[in-house]
Image 1 (cartoon, rainbow, N blue to C red):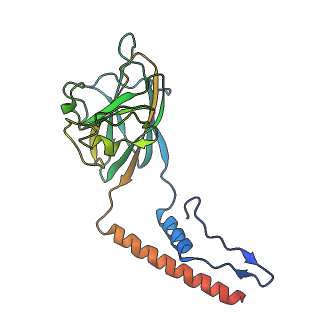
Image 2 (tube, one colour; image 1 turned 90 degrees about the vertical axis):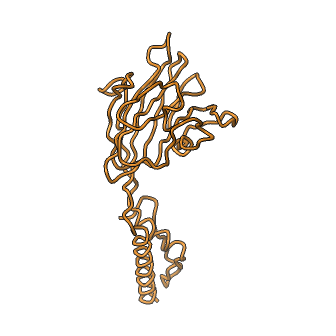
Image 3 (cartoon, rainbow, N blue to C red; image 1 turned 30 degrees about the vertical axis):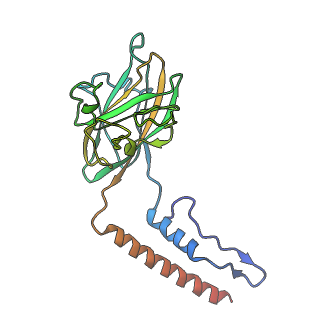
Length: 242
């Protein structure tokens, strides 16, 4: 099965029905698309508007979610410390054995405040003070005008993968640190809005299988065979039509 938007275009030309030449580039593109297959399935793991309601406000007992292969989304709202009533959402993500989490994308943000805060710690709950950088594996401010400790001007993180930024010690100084992607295990994430304004957010996590040793070479070899077979087939059809 070819992935969507992958095709070979062969058009008739004139009465003799000669086929337009297929370039090496288009052959390679078709083979790669065939190897990649269909795009990962996207699943909403948790939406606060659904029957589950508000995500946990307790760092010692976060909402426990198991991620599935493909794209996983968490959608919610926070509204700040008093006079706000829901400043923090705590959620623990479990990545199954044999898989890794390759991205943590701030795909949505709606608020009158230009930024919120997110960070995570290893384990099924958060230990220690969440206002101390040294208790995080990584953290980041997120939003349309997020300001972070690396001293760069405010920038939008909407649509940005935060995982490599959270792992950068100049971007998130003082943390325990980690190396992306996140391996199989459980991680507790905080999503926070400090100011008393309603803030809607969405985060997308991409989960992929851990590549088997030698799988890249196997895929390259298979791609080469696919290209060779396709070229031979197209050459045979061209000779028949001529």
